[in-house]
Figure 1: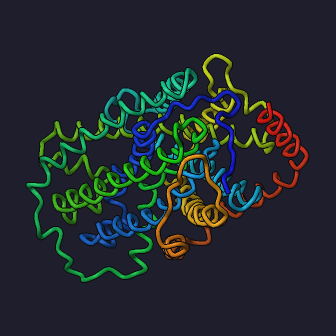
Figure 2 (figure 1 turned 60 degrees about the vertical axis):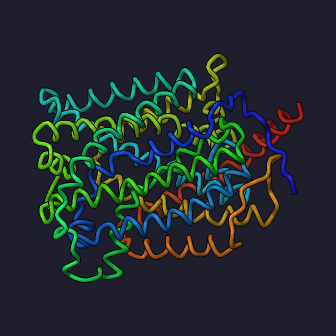
Figure 3 (figure 1 turned 90 degrees about the vertical axis):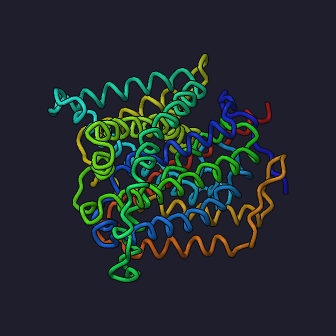
Length: 448
């Protein structure tokens, strides 16, 4: 059945095209992780030269997941991304739980990457190396990003596009200088094929570098020609992300060899070895640019999650207020970035990244199933939707891959997620009346 969905939501303007949305996905995905994760103990320390295999595992699982995102995104265009996809497919409770997890992983991931950003700014400007300096850097950057996005989604997208190009330059220079100096001996599997458990754990760790698509798709209510734009943007962005990650890991491993596992700044160390001291400075600057780009992308995307919750009655209606002149959800924007700023100031990368990884995998599983369910029910927009080949086979394989990764997650890492789900269930039960009123208001608005 064809399902009518409103052309606009509360005054939001559809200004995001394929390249703008793809830049947002690429920019949010290629954040601070690729500069930090190649030397992670579970990656370089355990897998060593076999580490690129974990990237490929993540890439295969992500390819299956992306098919679900493309299917769902071509059939649902409401703001909220995964929240809207799963809600349309499985109902309000399932959609809300996925929306909460999406918001949680976006919030914690942005705060985690902000810590990497501030740390590298201080390394480039030693005079800022203090608690007060770190706080000043973070708050000043958040204030700038909030101001840019306050004036419109198009302005935020233009900033993302510029940063997406700028962040690639240091990485491409590292590859240009580093690939010719790769020592094949550093890539030899001297210990044989890695154990399945080690590969699973490394894949979970590396998944932080792949997450972001779920947040970049939250502003679906501001995307032009959703049925075509979302699938094209998703495939375009994720293809280049996977290729970039594998080649960067091979270069770092091939240049540094066993020294990679003990490096705190792996790509900067590799750059210094092949380009000299200026190469290290360039890569440190690249981390700053890349993480800034990630923060800019998330400043556009994550507040739309709060907007969607408020729109549907889960949060106070004031959070869904759209600015009359700039057509942006400005109240949600200020509330979200204030929360992220607090988390970034008082927490560190490792404590926040674990929460993001597990939440991301759960969200991806929900979206993989949602794409299949929406197709089965015949939910579609006016345009011909993207159709995943293979029927239920693709979402089943995606869920099996996700389950394999989650098998290596510890109980301590699960506890935070369980607590969040319990809190979300309580909110769902307590907001029944507000949600009914919000649904009635939307029905009146659409009828008008």
